[in-house]
Image (cartoon, rainbow, N blue to C red; front, side):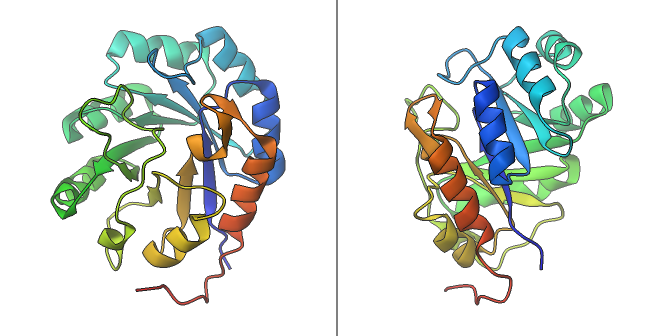
Length: 222
């Protein structure tokens, strides 16, 4: 039985990384976006990445970052994956993959069925898709807002690449979201925090336990 793979994003301390690893998560996300309360300097991000145990996938989240910015991040921080969380086109995704030789996860914001149209095209360019709740028009952050979308939009759908469910997930609702959508990967940031930008180790552990407790043989809800 394959357990659901969990990504905890927005880590800000070595203790956060340790809590994520101890809980059994598969991915550790580091945010490079100055407007976010989870934004890291290169020096801090490097120390966090170096503290991560072998096997924990280290992901850098950026938002419409240009090549010089990505150059600095990739040079300073030992990473396993890049997450593009802005308005990047499939062509930009392909260019980033070619330039850095790292797998690329592309985030797509979803509010209604019309937002799903670009997922197939994007799956041709990206190595993974992250399907997130579309932020409100006035929001400063493209993700990490604690918002969910109608998960029923994803029922029965498949794409060419692995995908990850995000947006409004918490330890209390992640199992329901997995059963409804059939997601085999989930991402959380604000849902495991005590206040914005401050991770709660107990919530991290509870989230991973709830996500991985969903069995493959449990029928998907409709």
